[in-house]
Image 1 (tube, one colour):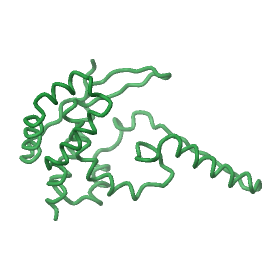
Image 2 (image 1 turned 180 degrees about the vertical axis):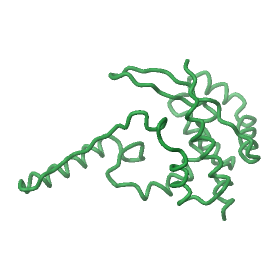
Image 3 (image 1 turned 90 degrees about the vertical axis):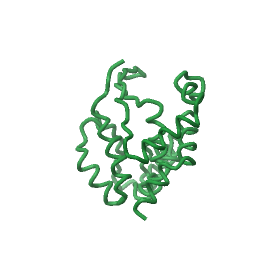
Image 4 (image 1 turned 90 degrees about the horizontal axis):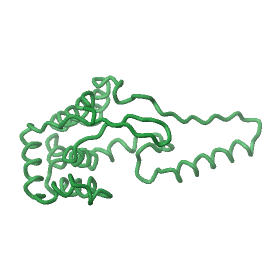
Length: 183
């Protein structure tokens, strides 16, 4: 069973689904067009690299956006984003059920409208009984992914995932976050 998870992640069926997700909203981008021109070949190469555990993600590229505050963004190459989606397609259901229900960060069906509705729900609970104190916590942890202890993160992941090849893939993606190149 340990190998089954990795086989699901790197299956051509899952890689095709991941490609569709990665290109969503970006079909006019040159890098998406280039990858798609030779799609079967590119996905087969990616599949073989993952299968043989010789896949190496390219260094992240870093750029600055101002909307409205200035933020540094790290961006993975398109083929690496396909791998991200392939991985998430399989492991997301494992982790999602253990998250706090109200956590809305990058979760399916938990966008801004969900967050506003939950806030409104709790606000009404508090105002119905004015003797209670209420607090609302919103957080954006600065440089979280650059500062997090990757070994602790991987230890937490290993509590839910025992497939060694899947852990290898997660490690290669997580450790790639430290070397962003500016462009």
